[in-house]
Image 1 (cartoon, rainbow, N blue to C red):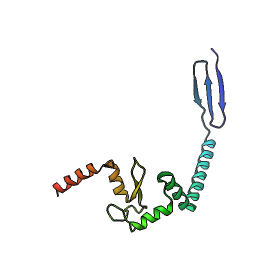
Image 2: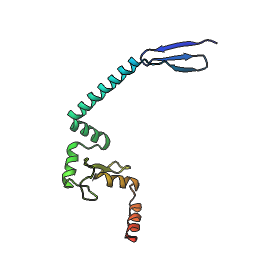
Image 3: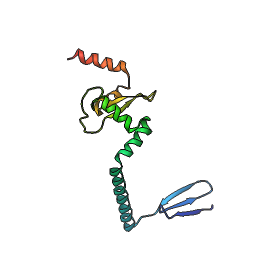
Image 4: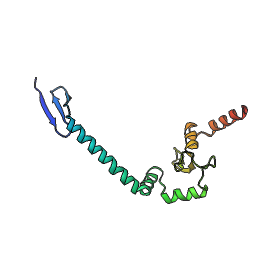
Length: 143
C-alpha cells in the first residue's frame, strides 16, 4: 500500500493520502505560534472596530440596501413619518437601539419600523393576523 504525505505550512497540518482515502493529522503548535496568532487576531479586531466606528452610517446604509432594498434616506423618512417611535406600540425602543425594519417575508415589502419587542412579537406570531387576533381575544378574556 502506498502513502503520500502533503504538508501544509500555512495551517500547520499534514495530509496523509492513500489510494482509497485521505486523513489529516494536526501538528502541535508551539506556544510562540499561539501568542503570535492571538496578537494577530487582537490586531484584526481592533482594526475592524476602528473601521466600524468611523463608518457607521456607510455600513448601516449598505446593510439596509442589501437586506431591504431601501437607502438610509428612506429609513430616515419612515422614521420621521412615525415621529421616531415604534409603528405598533408608539414608544421608543427600550433597548436604546434604532428601530428595526419590519417587512413582509413573502413580498419583501417594508411595512414600517418597530421596536425590538414588537418586532420579536410579530416574528413569533409568524406574521399571521389570525394568530394575533386569537391572542388578543385570549388576553381580553382574562383581563
